[in-house]
Image (cartoon, rainbow, N blue to C red; front, side, top):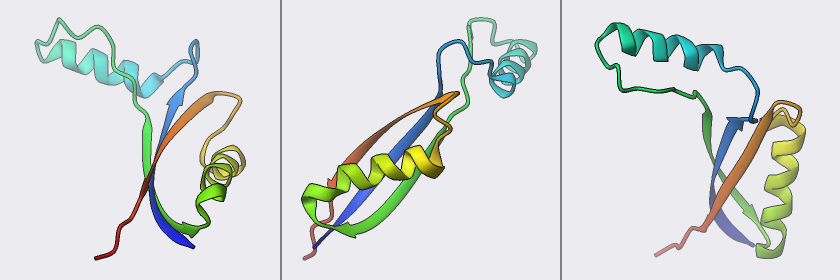
Amino acid sequence: MMTFEVTIYVTWKNGVLDPQGAAVTESLHKLGYEGVESVSISKMMQVRLTAEKEEVEAQVTEMCEKLLANPVIEDYTFEIEEVISL
């Protein structure tokens, strides 16, 4: 078994409205940042887990599909890094 740090990014699918992002965009325009075209609000999670190297990707995919992301309206990507103990 090995320890891994996983960074998971959950974003809106194309075409899904992001009301929070739209509100932030509007507020930035009111503050004078007219060059801001759009803002998208997403989630980033960090998970530390212990597993066999061959199983990590499947486990993280399952976590995302069952709980961490709503596959109907959200996409997800992740990065896996092995934790090296000294």
